[in-house]
Every structure is written in C-alpha cells, then in structure tokens.
Length: 280
Image (cartoon, rainbow, N blue to C red; front, side, top):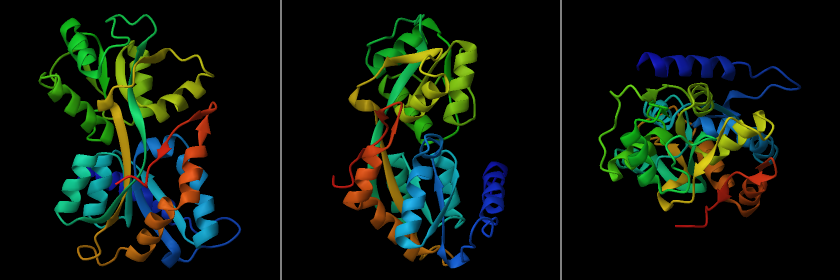
C-alpha cells in the first residue's frame, strides 16, 4: 500500500471509529464503508442521500472521498465494501480483473472546460479536442489534477483523441495532485484553464456567490459525458467485506424513488446529476 493510499485509509478509519458519537451508536455490522470520488462529496450529494438510506435500510454509510484511481486501490486492498466512481474504462478493467462485481451505472453529469473570463486562448464554444489543441499551441496555462482520478483519466483520453502527447513536462501544464475544488482554486490563482465536472463547478460558483473568477467556456461535447457507477468489492477476493450491505446499497441507488432524489438534488437551483440506472 503506497503512502498516499495509506494516508487516506488512516483518515477514513479515524472517522469510522467515531461511531458512538451522537444520539445512538451504530453496530459495526451495520456500517457500510465506501470509497467515492471528490465530486460526490464536494457537491453534498452523499450528505443529502445518506440519512434517507440509513432511515430506510438501517445501514450507516461511511465514505472516504478520493480520486477514482485511489478509490479502486482501496477496493483492491479490501479496505472498503463498495465504490461509487466515474471512470468507466478503469472500472470495467477492475471488474474484469476480479476485484469488483455487480457494476451498475447510477447517474451522470458532464465535464466542462473553465477558464478566465477574458478567455486568453479564445476557446469559448470550441469542441473539447479543439480546446486542447488551441491551449497547447498557444501554451496557455492549464491546471490538471494529475492524480489518476476519474477526471484526470478523462482528460488523458481527450489529449489522446486530440493526438497530442500529454504535456506533463511543459511549464504551462500545472499538475496539482489535488482534488477538484483545490485544483479549480489553483487555476483561479494562476489565471489558468482546467477541466472539471459540472457539479463541482456549481459548488465552486456557489462559494463565490455566483460570480467566480473562472467561468464555463466549453460544454456540451459528447466526449464530456461523466458517468458514475456503483461497484461492490468482490467477496471472493476480500472475505472481510460486507457484500450483503454493498448489494443493498447498489439496489437502493437504483430504486425509482432514489433516482428521483438524485434528480431533485440541486445547487443554485441547478440540477447536478441525471439519474440513469434504467439505461443498459
């Protein structure tokens, strides 16, 4: 286990140990440990869903929010019971390798390119591919999460589709190694472009009371769809995981009433996620 994963796990276990605080204690067998992405946590979606899940199932959901790459590692190491992540190619490989089972898509939003209001590279309204080509040709500052998260994985796919080697040695390419909100903050400070999921951007916009330094410049490209799925950790590889609780969570997330809850979740009056468990 590398140091970064270990750090997140220690923090997660510290939080999970505070089970007796509050009006009642939750028996350990009714606690479901989940690794998820920073976007589901930063937007407040899980804080919104967890109380209803607990009320309807008696299961207390505890989660750690990391990039999708780190979340998959936590599952591979048998440190959590279930995953809620957003990197379809990596997820399907994870399942094919036997680490996860019962993958089910739950919802989606989309990625957007944001940047300074004066748009120094003039990318507004372009496609994702044209945007990256333009930024690279003009050496415009670009902040990348650089953390193997679902967002970072999708960014790498887009560089490949644009037929541009990832410019990770270029001085204009800023690798933050941090979550999405922190990366947006760094991009704001450096007057740089970045790519983010729309939900986290809306959260960032809300923090600035609707008038943030960075604005959406590129959106709507079909390559920018951002799919989220639930995966149970494979009990055949991890005998300690609570597969029964993970299965109940997966089933609950696909219920029509839960899908409606997801669709009703808003920030600044804007819907953040589109439920799509019905799609195959």
